[in-house]
Amino acid sequence: MPAFRLVKLLTAATAITLLSTPLFATATTFGPIISPKNPFVGQNGLATMHGDPASSDTTPFAGPGNATINSNRLALQSACPTLLGTSDGYIFGLCTTIFGRTPTVHLFDSQEVNSLAELAIAKGNILGGVYAYIDNQDKLVLTNGDNQLLRIGKSSTNGKWALAIADSIPLTPIPASDSVVGLAPDWQGYVWFATANGLAGYADPVTKNVVTLPLNATGGSAEEVANSISTSPAGTSIATTFATYLLARNDASNGIKVLWRQAYDRGPARKPGQLSWGTGSTPTFFGPQSGYEYTTIVDNASPLVNLLVYRTQDGSQVCKVSLFDSNNSGSENSPIGSGRSIFVASTYGYPYPALPDGAPASQPSSANFVGGIERVDVLEDDSQGCVVKWVNNKIRSSAVPKLSLADKKLYTFVRHTPLFPDSTSTGILDNYYYTTIDSETGIIDSKQYVGAGFIFDTLQMAGLTTVQGTLLQGTITGVVRVRKA
Ligand SMILES: *[C@@H]1O[C@H](CO)[C@@H](O)[C@H](O)[C@H]1NC(C)=O
Ligand SMILES: *[C@@H]1O[C@H](CO)[C@@H](O)[C@H](O)[C@H]1NC(C)=O
Ligand SMILES: *[C@@H]1O[C@H](CO)[C@@H](O)[C@H](O)[C@H]1NC(C)=O
Image (cartoon, rainbow, N blue to C red; front, side):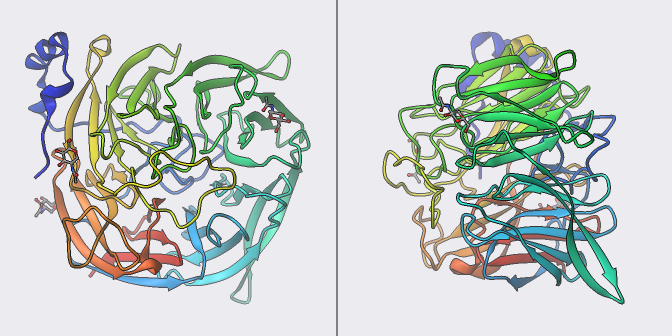
């Protein structure tokens, strides 16, 4: 059973509000996904690693649910952190040997998940990004190690599939020593990006003009970017290792303006289970009316991290809520955001087999993986802040959880030590389970065995639910396909 601890974080003022708010009496309304939809990306739920350009980590499709499942593993000898779906029913996988040494694009059919074609991507001299998106013509958009913005298309001749680069834009302002870590198009079609060394920018796909702004100097510190970026009609949100930004194009000068910058508590060091010394969040836009009234990230404060919710319009803070306990307070996942609700999974202590180049030492050097998922809701009167709706410290989520707006379940994988299922230690023989969670209560409503050992490690990667309700999950060595038996 989850440990409900509603009272812990309430101030007297919010406690009084709660009594008169029907928050707990009525079923939650999730959504909307931003409308009109971004015209430059493919289908919501399929087109980005976090579902859509807002990084809501929701899908409009129902998953396999709590029915009996069967699963298959496609072995690829590489990790596939990016699995994206096209509107005509194919899957693009961006797979790399662990942590990005040789990126390869795979094309899969969405029914059997057979690899139909593949294309190696130039890896350049440093770690290439693992983020990509599907555009409105079902092409995969990504950057290679030579800082070229590529569009990759698929075609078939006599039933034989091929992948080819359809278009490329050199992102010339980016020095060869730096690389793109996240990209997403805005509602005007400019393709925004952020680099590891803290350069924000956009490319104009028509003129191929590229404009940049160094965020690494804005706050007087060497800010870096370690996660992807998000867009909404209000602008582009980027979280550096120091601060969250909302940026927009300055139409008059063709430059970039900083609409707001909010520094956060980055703590004294990288935490175990994090890949950088800073937030692990791709910023999430969400909200009950427009779908982007709010922007949220999780900071890296110690001992407890905080969920930070800002008003997208002006960056003012709606709430700051400390999450989890001192033995599991950290998240490398992008939060789920939909309606008034946010869901955060703890990754504190998660063992990664490798770290990105230059990742500073963690403090402590390692920790047990306790796990946990926590739900926080913004109150209807947001001047009253937010409230913890539930926390379940017994879910050892080993993937980025996604919320299905169709069946209202959270989908993830969990891992357990074979002989000691309650142990918080981790090992290469751990078992991996497909897991669904009731988003209203935080209670696990299905947990089914999928596989054992290192090859099944889902490594905090994001799954993809197809239109047909099949769940595809990247692992260290390929892709697992889960569907109703
Ligand atoms: C900011 O990033 C640019 C591009 O990578 C780099 O040339 C510059 O040295 C960085 N500045 C700081 C202060 O880190
Ligand atoms: C984590 O810390 C909490 C609060 O101190 C404690 O109740 C819980 O038992 C700890 N969990 C583990 C697995 O050590
Ligand atoms: C399984 O899911 C269905 C549909 O969401 C739900 O009604 C049912 O209560 C769930 N079963 C369990 C055991 O939670």
